[in-house]
Length: 437
Image (cartoon, rainbow, N blue to C red; front, side, top):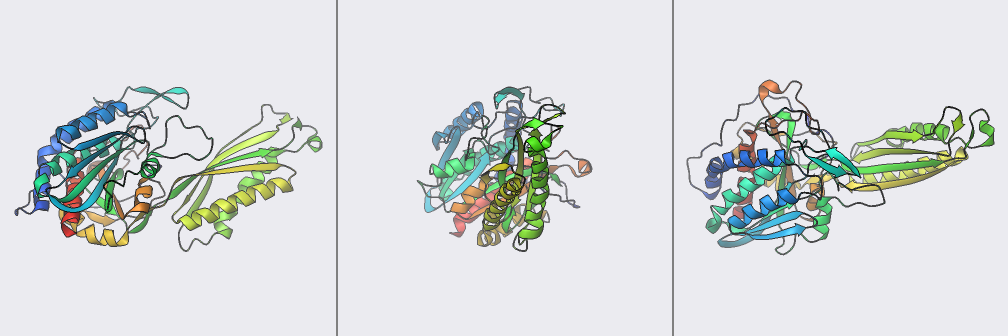
């Protein structure tokens, strides 16, 4: 997931262990059963954290997952997309199919947590040897879903339907990515390859840990939840000349400065932000080799974020038109390439309303509505095909909330007690959904 998640500062009860329910319904069984797999989940997370792998390189992680699912007696598919793993748990009774998804990949970040199980892994990233860390919490996602698989397998005969466990590579993007046109992140690639088919998934659930909420807090939002994300590449071509004689050439640096200023009006003056907010940011600009030479070209990169696919299309068009026309007015030319990496993550309103009581049952007085999140997630591609619900799980002890390192930071930490709530939540969502159908 790209960028920070959400800011939630709340007074809440602390989490020590999964709550035990008095009755013995199927959902109450799996809520109670989470306690038996909590310690295993912690061990799995620590192991995966110590051995992180970048997008489409998650071979060790995939082998660990596949072996575990096979031990549970599941039908297991490997090498899905690239390194994806899918496990199918067929219940003892007929019913619908529910999907549960976890992402497996780490980030090119040098860890600075000082943990006894900290990563010292080096992998190749875009042609360079780079330190790797689970700085976004995907190790927690994998461990939680492995525990959920064992929890639900223990009640397999009672399940009224099928659970499809989707362990997905490359949510953060392929590790060998260098811009060459459209790129497909793990979720989008898996959907295109039919991961939601055979058997056909009726609804899908996923979660993301966040340091911006206290341990055990669950946050959700109905409708648009996380932003779409487009990568922006602009090359401004001028004509190189001596810096003392700018009239003999075309200055792409001046044209680029005017383009950057002009792009500020795309959202502020030419986009109706009443349906959904939008952001256009230029993050890098590079051009020139010497103080007295006007270069022949300048390259810029940036990001575009929106919360509506139509708004995304409009902003992309306006960015392209603005850059091309301003460059032309300066005697230069602008080549604009926009790559849509993530769609808007939209939680199905009906599914969200239906399953909200389940979340509140798992975490009484610890479920809150989340604000819009300008970070992006390729869970969006699953939710474009079938009804989906994606929620956030707080992983920072209350006493450490002030100054907690954000996701993607080299100091990002996960409170292992939060895994209990994640196991309960995904287990209960699966059983409640299957039973309700």
